[in-house]
Amino acid sequence: MAPNDSQRNLLRMLPGVDRILAALGRIAAVADVPKAVLVRCARLTLDAWRERILAGGAQAPAQSPALETIVEEVLGRVAQAMAHNLRRVVNASGIVVHTNLGRSLLAATVLDNLAEIASRYSNLEFDLAAGRRGSRYTAVEDVLCEISGAEAAMVVNNNAGAVLLCLETLARGRKVIVSRGELVEIGGAFRIPDVMAKSGGILSEVGTTNRTHLRDYAGAVDDQTALLLKVHKSNYSIVGFSAEVSLRELVALGAEHGLPVMEDLGSGTFIDFSHYGLAKEPTVQESVAAGADVVTFSGDKLLGGPQAGLIVGRRASIERIKQNPITRALRIDKLTLAALEGTLRLYRDPRRAVAAIPTLQMITMPFAVTQGRARQLSEALAALGDERLGISLRELASKAGGGALPLLDLRSLCVTVSIRGLSVSRVEAALRAGTPPVIARIEDDLLILDPRTLQEGEAAVIVDAFATLLKRAPNDPK
Ligand SMILES: *Cc1c(COP(=O)(O)O)cnc(C)c1O
Image 1 (cartoon, rainbow, N blue to C red):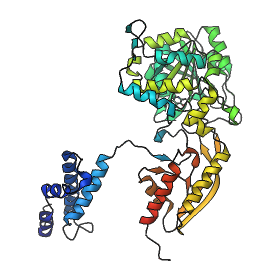
Image 2: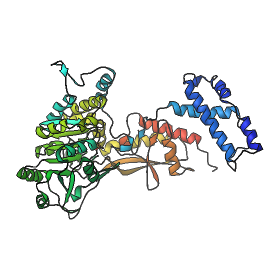
Image 3: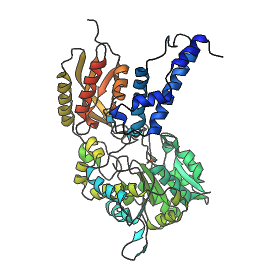
Image 4: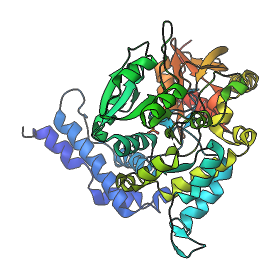
């Protein structure tokens, strides 16, 4: 539809890009911003105004905006364009291994070597002793074998890749026997039956959802069978009338028929959490000791390292896996490798690992520590002295998250905050829009700040965020 006279008039009165650029040229804050960014932001701002004018109706402006208004909008877009898209956030959700928020934080001691490897040449695939080409897996194989007790190890990009690679290597075109109780979906479209199909393995389901017996596996073994697979029920639990076959029993059955046994541990941990008053999770060492040929697990779930897929087990199986050309497509990057090596080295002394690795620190954090932190945070918020703030303390459950320790509730003292005149979702959104964004959780229509997942200095960030929010929020009439 052609613009009418008044629309044409409004459009004519919009400033040109040159005038906007000239105005921006007088603003010191954007002196270092590349010209291309300024031009693009000016154009986008003008486009938005043109659209509003041409749309007509109630949204349409009655008069052309002042140059200052437009410049103000352009500056907003420039600030957005100059900020990184991937940036730090404050996790006040209480979910420790939060997949959407980057899962695990690297231990501080890991960062120095990571920075050096990132900015210098390294012996990534160079055997320094022999002076010729080496393997990148050397960096972590020794330490992985040492702490897991396995004969051999290798690593790929993530655990989904590890599972795919192992199935493809060990079972392509042949049968893999899995319990119906373990056909898991992890989220992000990782489903055992789908990964199996992509690997070329033929899924042979046995047992029922709640009960699978050794005789179910034994009855399914035939000359087409390549592998017995056990999958950790990461994010759910079958309770009540249930039965599953232990890894040890599967290994015995495998030995009887000359079949390898693989276990996908999902999270995978070297730490026995029952020593910390938490539920027992199977450890990698236990799976290796039970005789699994291949054990796969994630680098960034309970392990608390970078995203990676770790594979440990018997030498013969691991060697076959290393020879698979798909390995090249799932290759671990050198930065990840540096971070993984640093993280794994900490596990040589489990107590040191728990103290230094943030994921472990947060999961094993005693209730009393959350209590102290919650009280401090609530007092700091109260000290803002704004009578619209409603602050209280509540005992709630944090989560390990990331498909780890599925049913485990970690008892935390949390802070709930309300602001008179603002809905819970408005407050949540305002915190999320801050710099840095603060990610809270909402439960029972309450905004919850869980101190368990806060890092050093972040309580102060939250207090600042509320101070800003209160300044901007309209004072209610009362
Ligand atoms: C999380 C998980 C995976 C996938 O691991 P990523 O490291 O996320 O690729 C595979 N299997 C199980 C059982 C899991 O819990």
